[in-house]
Image (cartoon, rainbow, N blue to C red; front, side, top):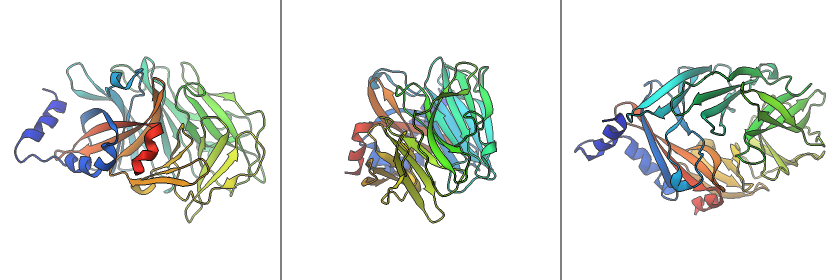
Length: 361
């Protein structure tokens, strides 16, 4: 019998009260409005870990009924490192992890993620891009592309790229922030990037990258025909997003006293507008155009103009990404559940993006 089955049979045993029941209860306000698409686990994690995340492999199903979680990426923060692994259910029902990649966290800006993890389109492999944005100098910023052949491949198989420097992809420009549009818009695995041109004063513009064919590399794709020259307070780092119609761009920046969010028209040379009501870190832009924040364990949505529309406690839920199943866009969440025995399981939930605002009701 697999550890997965044993873990949940434990619920029927008198006196067995796994800690993850508390986590399920604390998130119930949200999860009862979502659809459960799988419980993945259990995984043994170091007892010194300070944060555990699970990002499921991107769906390939054409309907919600045809999707179930069979694999994904675990990210464990432990003793100064982010440890990335690929986990999958083997033929006997056991959970296996492969290809651990470790990323040093020293030198991180406490207000920004040093690494950003983007799960890309699933083909014959599970794929993820790991971005590192060095807060001290853009010349050290890089990206790594990892893949694991499905259903049970080693993470980091032939055809991946590690530590590709972001300088030089666009001649004379540095990349200060990125975000990935959910497939299939505008093309699978298109990355929008915020570029810094030589100054002074610093000039910023919008760009697009794509993941090239095997061997996988980040390569120049397109730039808007008109590049806006945007002046912000000097920094080496932004959180950056572009809407579904490629008409509005957003940059989220920590100012020293809090978060500020700027908006401008993509590809038009005009001064950015400060959205005064957006005072929390922005973590994603959805296909509806709403801005999503999870700062401080609170799920917040702002409309495209920056007006708050929803705020509710996450209760331990973690935002994963937005992705299409068939023609419907869904927002994915994962709930890490720590058992009494030090193992972790992850319950994955989805909600149609069009229903996100209802979570605050």
